[in-house]
Amino acid sequence: MTVVTRFAPSPTGFLHIGGARTALYNWLFARHHAQFGSGGRFLLRIEDTDRKRSNDEAVSAIYDGLTWLGLDWDGDAVSQFSNAARHVEIAERLLTEGKAYKCYCSAEELQEMRDTARAEGRSMRYDGRWRDRDPVEAPGGVAPVIRMKAPLVGETVIPDLVQGEVTVANDQLDDMVLLRADGTPTYMLAVVVDDHDMAVTHVIRGDDHLTNAFRQFQIYRLLGWDVPEFAHIPLIHGADGAKLSKRHGALGVEAYRDMGFLPEALCNYLLRLGWSHGDDEIISSDQAIEWFGLDTVGRGAARFDIDKLTSLNGSYIRQADDARLVELILPTLKKTLGNQLSEDTERRLTRGMAGLKERAKTIPALSESAEIYARVRPFELDEKALSLVEGEGRDHLQNLANLLAEHEEWRADGLQDTVRAYAEGGDIKLGKAAQPLRAALTGRAVSPSIFEVMEILGRDETLGRLEDVLNRG
Image 1: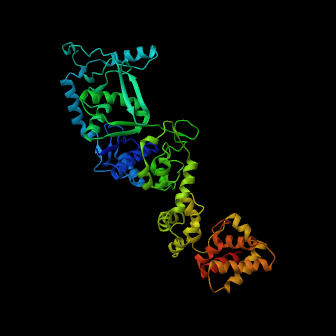
Image 2: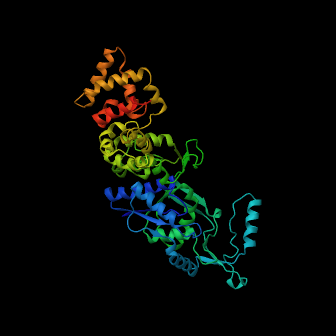
Image 3: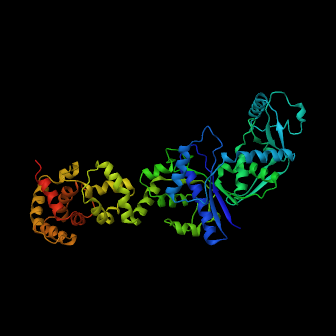
């Protein structure tokens, strides 16, 4: 059997972090079975039946977010709204087969049911007053809804692949609306019909849909269709255990991209929010595809921690290809420095990236540290750097500038030997000599090895930057 999963977001806003994890789990499950089973497909359906809230911008955000994360889908994305005629056809079929009926309840009658339920401290359930009533009794001028004939006794049992066997008494459910009075299908009906028509075998989604599953299960049974396997994964909470919100980091995927997170780091982090493979923390996409299964998805809510994500992102930055990182930071450098970049910037960045990426945890942080190779002379020193090139620091800087001017072989180890010899000759610690150099050459008090920086900048640029500082008033 070919495993078919689907991701079915509503296009009412950005692709949020919980949706991204749901998409990831569906993608991994399908790709695992494609490579290690009898076949697998991952489908995308845009559930755009709510025309007032759906918009093209949100659809584009979903496409862009999935593409950035590397979660490619098979075939074309499906619009649920475009299948409305099919949904209506199925509702009318159930009506014809006596498995659904027309309900002519007025708005006032439904409100009375709600008020009664509220007074009795229970959730509102339709009381079935039109279930077996003769349609000839229908009041004039009332457009009916079509309701399903749900089972009145017994239980609905779902063998969930994450939650285990879950059960609800049928008298806790009611005859759900399939078609509204205006003839439009409800979400519950549309989901079942679309999943059936798309041959979905596994419905993997958040456990906030678990109550929906019971109603959808009943629709499948009424239609005589095979019921897909359900897997309801726990929701993501904040680090404090509260429901995830914007203050915890419940942002759109594009926000994490803009904050400088790598897609593979975000996928790795989302993967581990509820799923585990022993003690493995850094898991590549290929490993995730090989190892992923629903049997190790936990039942407890996962906690989103932006600090842990940031730390993991730093690990991925250190592993990333240098050329790719250069490409990622150049736009930020151009924006920050107003396109005033040294002509030698890209070459310097490529040579210096190994040292730069050791400390960076996000792309903006990496870009900021990389400014030392991009600046055009003369440039301003920050406050800490200025303090290091005054007084005794300036004297050391002048002496070193004279020594370095005589240095021909411009390599980090030789440059370090020269500065070390100067420090030993003056009976001072190496840092006393190196710190003013760092401040003058980078404009900062912190940087990669200053001798590596000097080699990458080259002899002329290094001496020129020293001269700029020494000539300050």
